[in-house]
Image (cartoon, rainbow over all chains, first blue to last red; front, top):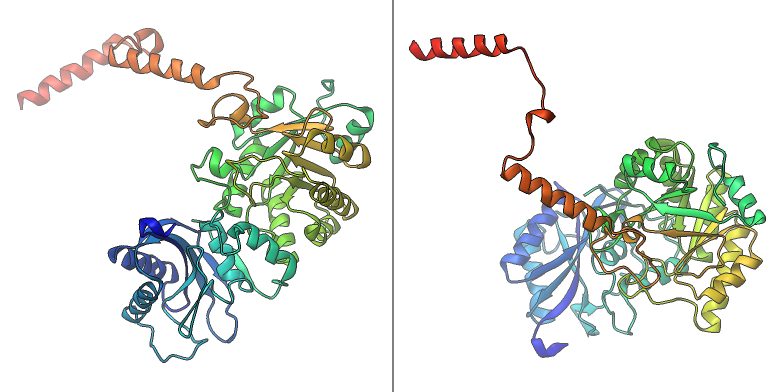
Length: 171
Length: 289
């Protein structure tokens, strides 16, 4: 897999400040300008905020992308794009934000460093990330040899998602 | 046996067909003229499948299909049907997140399209969803075995080949029947397992790649008439090559338009010669000025 120098990655996008769809489109465009190839993308989803419920609904989406960047550089690029689109670095964790970009999966690698953990540690509990990811890259092979859509289905059995409202929007 | 009555097929009748050993015939449809054609040809059940996504909307799989798209097409199918029962296939993320959302979307499917039943993929974990839909008066068709919302459809690998997996499919079928499902689609299940399930279940089984012993059969219309533009899976028989027929006709049309062989005045409308004369005269006068 690593022989080509290209890794397939799954990225999750979220926005609940301003025009969510437009923000996510801009973030994807910014990634592409920086050499990240967006291979496929999910529909947009409207989701209820978790953590701090007193904020607007989110628009979420996910993309399957290909990159030659190492995981840390990819993360830095994502942070840079977030900052350029107006997210304050020290903003509280659960606050409203124009754009949030998370690396859910980086090839079939497991990464555990202080500032980056992949697979994303909470993706299995978060329908707002998991559903778009499963749509964008259903056959993505995760660490542990399970496809993303099978992972999604197995989480449906184990987790009570009934408190999370996730609505797929027309494309 | 082809039914002789023109009466609308009901959910109860499907169970009766199973008891009488009358095979249930089902095909996919996504639009009005196709639905009318299938209905008149004697197809008992039309499935507005989420295969809509890859078969006619150009997506690579069924996952991007939305409730809005399904509603749009299902309503069109219902407008073309007099006799067949119509099933609305619940798309990805229309029923997975919560029971409430599932019932709300299923209710919308029935109310906005006039479909008679909804279908959802997945095993025993969706028993609660099925029960809640049935309690709200919505008939449900289950779907077990290979479920395209879950696996790579290109592979079309048969499901339930090991004992544990076969037992799981049996448990799922019984759980969904107990929850009130009216019917079950068995996709790519070994035929002996499908035969066994058909014999123990009260609800009709509809096979696709599941052998000859199911109570009924379903195929994607575009596959069985050679219109899908893909190599059909192993279990599909191409009954007629509509692709070749349409292509031949279209090529002929292109040729005749390009060579002015079509249309001739025979295909055209006429008006009185005097009217044309007046138009010509007026045009001439305009030129002079």
